[in-house]
Length: 377
Image (cartoon, rainbow, N blue to C red; front, side):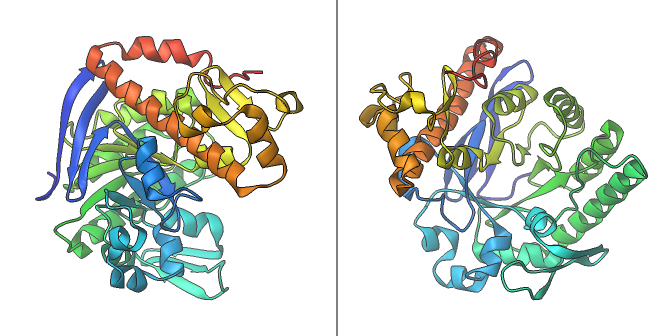
């Protein structure tokens, strides 16, 4: 059950896809929703009013990076994430576990937590489940995540299943400790399902995690190498074990087709750096497919980056201009491309919500599946 100040309700269903609303102390979020990633408390180059204008409802901040710089105490002194950043809407923070395991060397994981060397200053650090919760409480996010042990996919052939089981079991024990450590009544806490690529392990993890009484549940360890079909099977299997009344979060997925797959399976929340990262590298999502705007053919193209898009970038600028900005490394080019990709992604989720409510989500998915990730040029 969600704690006071929070509520989640499903308002429409279309098969296993669902549309609803997550209420938080800092605002309401229509679901399914995509959360732009504000790693250091900012979506790179995009101001809060621009994010709101693009359709963002909730942002994700990175616990590990903010803990390193400027430190959670500094954020707390400036009013938590809401006061520190100027984004007054809801915030979700990850636990920092994925960054610790993916960015650090000399990594040691044991029952107490994770010991690692900071890539910022080289000093040894230690992150426990309790510490991850304490940092997020200081940051003041609306939704916090437990510390989990994330295994790579695919698992190594030798002892892969045993390692995935051990990581899932440890994640569950860490989840119990996280619940005991969590004290903020105005912050929801989500558990994380692990289990690698094993359906049996992920089902068991989901069943046990759901039994602990978290406010919501996340799929961890996906989007790291498995194919789309297998991911869909694993997500669907886990949902058989999770309570209908709690929000479901698929961590780290942001390709348009991955988002539609997730909605079809009943996911409520998504996050990913892909829209802004792709924008900075000149790869645009459009209704006609992927556009590599740096290509020479766009040098004198007067058409909008995506003629079907109503974002500021597409209303005011040409493909030729955007290509020029990116080629000369003008910061405005990365901003405009990132804004377009965010607008496209957020609008896609809005369309998904509308389609679920109208009972035509499958039709929308079929309509877009053939074009979203094929080259437009």
